[in-house]
Amino acid sequence: MQFLAVGLNHTTAPVSLREKVAFPVDQIGQAVASARAWFGRDGTADVGKEAAILSTCNRTELYAAGRVAGGVEEAIDATAHFLAHYHKLPYSELRPYLYTLPQDNAVRHAFRVASGLDSMVLGEAQILGQMKDAVRYAEAAGGLGTYLHQMFQRTFAVAKEVRSTTAIGAHSVSMAAAAVRLSQRIFDTISEQNVLFIGAGEMIELCATHFAAQSPKSLTIANRTLERGEALAHRFDGRAIRLADLPEQLAKFDIVVSSTASTLPILGLGLVERAIKARRHKPMFMVDLAVPRDIEPEVGRLNDVFLYTVDDLATAVQTGMENRQAAVAQAEAIIETRVQSFMHWVDSRAVVPLIQDLHETSEALRLAELERARKLLAKGEDIEIVLEALSKGLTAKFLHGPQQALHKAQGDERAHLAALLPQLFRTKR
Image 1 (cartoon, rainbow, N blue to C red):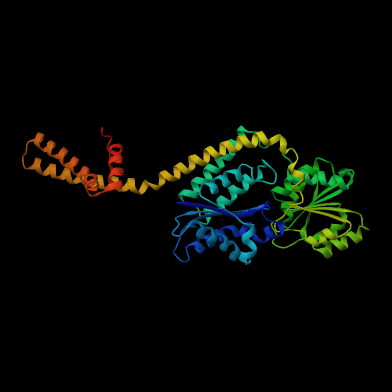
Image 2: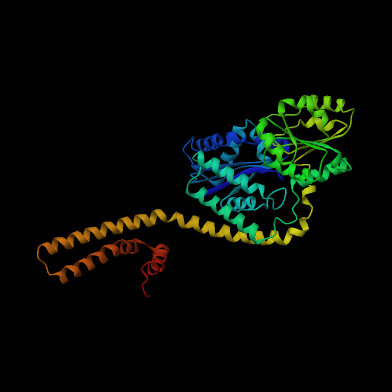
């Protein structure tokens, strides 16, 4: 059984490429089905028989499990080609940014990601929920089988253990906190600023919580669905507007934080230029936490706009890293132990078909000898004689295979069998 994890993240690829490889939430199920079909298209390998896709603002990863007819490198290459093909990207453009992890390295990576060790914000908890969502989508699309299901269940258990027994999440600086900190470099006090949040998802809720703690002059939620925006705005004594209202409303806001699932930019260069002009060039602080990006990159070139993306926040969120090194070492030790345990389970699964065959063969032999004994008893044979014949018959049939193998073997093969048979039959030597 071969496990694979192939993907890119905030450490291997810039946001300009990550947004091209991101899977919209409503397409993940379809993408999982496409991946499974891609691997089975020529019948040479079924490494993608089980598949799941994790896609966030910081990473896109495909996890797969199955038998490999060719080599591992061939399976890895097929996975990379699928990502390039699905997103209509040149393979040569994508491949240098991908990491490819086979077997226990794939399992270890999943454990580390869920535990927050591979995040831009070390120890952040949001990734665990995102991974659980990815598993639900994969399961709904038929992508989970025995092996990936077991791997992800252990992944979640490991993440829970790491978070409950180490201080990996202590002192972490979230994206939301980093956004607040950066905005304070532009404005002396947030309490005098009007803040706009675009979207109403988990990340926006987190950001709104952090900014609301600074008592901004006003807090507004812009969302495609007004009802959902109003529900979130109500929590922070704010108001809600529709995304369609942004062209008329944008100039009113000093701070803009955006994180939606849109596949196209929501704020273009022209829209922001008009807003800055209407503001008489009063500075505007903007944070784009979406992948694909919600704000066109060209906006960052405007003199009065301070635009930050998820990658720009990388330095800010490293604060406190030194305080967490001991927790990281402890977490890595836990993960390593659990990886070895899982791989032992995988190895044990490999002999299950053999054990089943042994049981079926043994049962057939037992039934044959039992039927023979019943016929002897029906003829009136003495029960002691029948039992003796039954026991000898069973013994002879069970030993026939090993004895034949030992007689036919030669050289090293015979020596190996001679050493192995006493362990199998617990004989004395």
